[in-house]
Amino acid sequence: MKPDSFTMSCVLKAMSEVVLDGPPLARMVHCYVIKHGFDSDVFLGNGLVTYYSRCDDILSARNLFDEMPVRDLVSWNSMISGYSQGGFFKECKDLYKKMLLLKDLRPNGITIVSILQACAQSSDLILGMEVHKYVVKNRIEIDLSLCNSFIALYAKCGSLDYARELFEEMSEKDEITYGTIISGYMVHGFVDEAMRLFTEMRNPGLSTWNAVISGAFQNNRYENVVNLAQQMQDSGRLLELMRGEGYKMIDEFDEPNQHVLDQAPVCFNLEIILVSRDAKKCFKKPNQHVLDQAPVLRELKRRL
Image 1 (cartoon, rainbow, N blue to C red):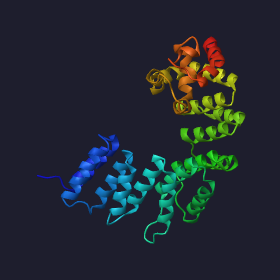
Image 2 (image 1 turned 180 degrees about the horizontal axis):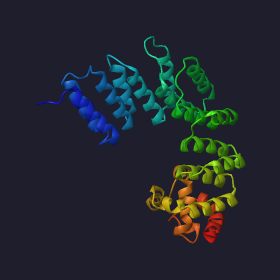
Image 3 (image 1 turned 135 degrees about the horizontal axis):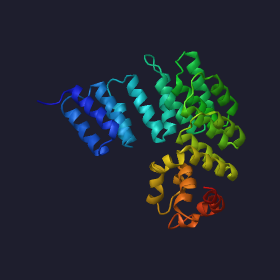
Image 4 (image 1 turned 60 degrees about the vertical axis):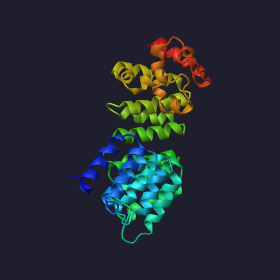
């Protein structure tokens, strides 16, 4: 008994969730699909596009997308999402504009989230606002995920008034909502406003702690960092952080690059004080960024 198209679609779904073995496995499954005449199956095609994208083989994903005899909404969303999540923002926006020309398909909420992510990451406020108008004009349902995406767009592009207006209008807010607008305020230097929003939260998660502490650190508000570290310890979140992936990053990188430092400042800036008496001992080859922060790290060490 050989697998049918339904079985293969289930296999692809399972593969996409864990990304097993990367592109080689994707190409193996792709060859099987073609050999057994399943290449006209839109569901299998969509699954392969998604899997190629998640394996960072975006070229194979696009080639397959272009070769598909039939493309449905999922096909377009899979390719647009693959571009957006893979950092191919120009390609993502170009494909979105091409989708708008279709007569039989229209973008939905999933499409919009992907294109907004691309606009936010590339600081394309003009296209982002056009997308916003499209959503309103076509009455696309604005759920929590989509609203968070709009806030991220406006916050990252510096339109904090728009971001705050949307934030205030939301009847439901989650961790991402708060973390996004707090990060926006921090990036643009509005530390006090970010701190006010942070105090509104009843039980902020680690991602929001990360946003507010890293923002205070980057704005040289070291006293805020010290106070926040004390709050984290008092609430038990510092211990939770130590048990997370952030702690492992310190051991895994002898010489952390700027990307690592930017992505996990709370892990480095707070956990360092628990594993070293001096910032210079944190890494075998500390870079200047770490050395520059030695005074505040020592103060954190003294306080905690």
